[in-house]
Length: 482
Image (cartoon, rainbow, N blue to C red; front, side, top):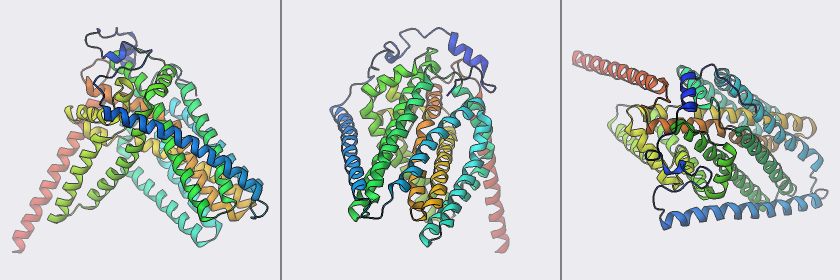
């Protein structure tokens, strides 16, 4: 993944100041930056419970990796031995899926180049390419022929339609997203491409290894084998989350150093320190964030659907909003920046970063509407769809009975490989927001965020005035009818 020497949308003044400005005096610089080559010292006294949970989750990670590896080896050997007696064809089942795993790695690397050299086109392309590819997967599944295949294919088509509607809704935000990505990713830390390439290679190799175990369990298809496949897929999801967040913590730490203090930090060194000292906190965050994001997303969906004047519905929506606002302080992706920079526990880091966002007028609302996470999600969906189409079409031509399961496995694996590949980009944006929230007046930041906050406030005021006018018109109509 080549690193550009310039970016058309990035503020040259901002970048030059961050490179040439002398570091802050030691009295105002966090202690984490005094020892950049070593472990980031904690800014607060770690509790015994915090240390316990860090060690517990770190132990769980390595224990599950060991146990899953043993399970995969056993299932693979058993599957190859019993393949002839259970009408399983390894030569037809493995090549399409393993090829799709490799394709997901190549597609993820290729997408890096597009994002780096032309962020604006990458953002726009993602929001129209993802629905097309997802719909193509749905059509492929429908063509397989069975009722189950058609039902799952219909779900993919519906998902594609939802993406299209969402893309139309958020079109006005593209300009800001493009500019923010350009600023945050301009001149990434040294050796970023080594970290990204290594992470993608590890994710591809590990996924290919798990595929062999899934094939071994598929060969016999007992109820116990279905349980084994479920366990392997859960392990894959969590391990990929951890790998993604390790990269996110390392890159965000190096980027934060530059944004906040104008100092440069090697991404590879940050990656090494993260693996050595921060794995426990990352495992906790990798568990909490997906759960909280799912719950909070569900609550926000309920709030959107409860746009009724009914008092009970309004009260329920207000209660859900309170829960959502509390959850975001317990675990959010921005907390990974403080995990890497200050060696904080994940919950403490999440709480501290969100308090900073709330202390800056309009920043919380801006971050809540940021499209970076949606962009990364749909980019990963695109990678997953390409992987699924590769395996599904191949399998449809040689062995139709395996087409559905292989296509779904390929989609899930491709999605996670895509998320790992884009972790560095999201890390840069996270670091940019966190550094800005701690010093909005810094000369290292241009007017991108303040101008966007002002724009959102104007739109909000206009919307409130419009709602007030509609309310008055309804009251007048009601009075006239009486």
